[in-house]
Amino acid sequence: MATPHIAAEPGDFAPAVLMPGDPRRAERIATQLMPDAKLVTDVRGMLGFTGTVDGRPLSVMGSGMGQPSITIYATELFSLFGVERIIRVGTCGGISSQVRLGDVIVAVGAHTTSNINQLRLPGLNFSAVASFGLVRAAVDAASSTVARSGQQTHVGMVVSDDHFYVPNPDPGWSAKLARYGVLGVEMEAAALFATAAEFGKQALAVLTVSDHLLDAEPDQPEHGHRMTPEERETRFAGALDLALAAAFS
Ligand code: HPA
Image 1 (cartoon, rainbow, N blue to C red):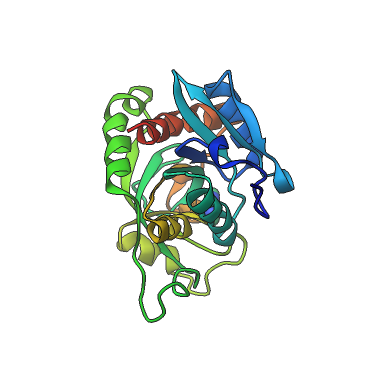
Image 2 (image 1 turned 60 degrees about the vertical axis):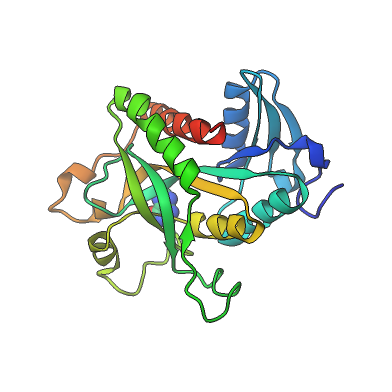
């Protein structure tokens, strides 16, 4: 039963889906985790795989970039392919001075600059929150797995922005968000959480900090460091452990 965006049958997806933005990252995650991973869809190059991890079924599929893109895939997976939970595994920019490059953020909720959720319930400022059980499973896993590699895990709010390149017109935007406890900025979580709410399903976002908005500020030299490709992969693996713990919780 192909949809406009997913060429698969309902049984082709596992109840739990890990969802990076990049379809090639989905392929790398799937083949690393699952020797039996099979490609189940590749419409528009948005690769989706299903296999097993220690006998437990899992799917991994790209979301593309931005809230409209993840909304399309999450809607189809939740409504037509029997998917029960989607865990976004992505990167974010750091906003809070508490977070460092390579740290992991477990998002309990996502503010957004987008109108995308206002269209769902006109007149309501929808609060896009992650599923508590998935947050708890990821945070529990953090105390054992990631702590060992020296990578810090933060639990709190992020903001899902619609622009990557256009700066917010308020020059003090990120400093204000930091004061309000926002940890990082990415581009998909708020829409994913709202889509899960629409269908009574579960969602989480586990984000690796790949850059920091304070980089531009000369009095914060500790944020100037850029991750090497090796660091990126190691750090990303830490985040993946938390996402897997949530997927199988
Ligand atoms: N903005 C939005 N998304 C991101 C960023 C950013 O600075 N870094 C990583 N993902």
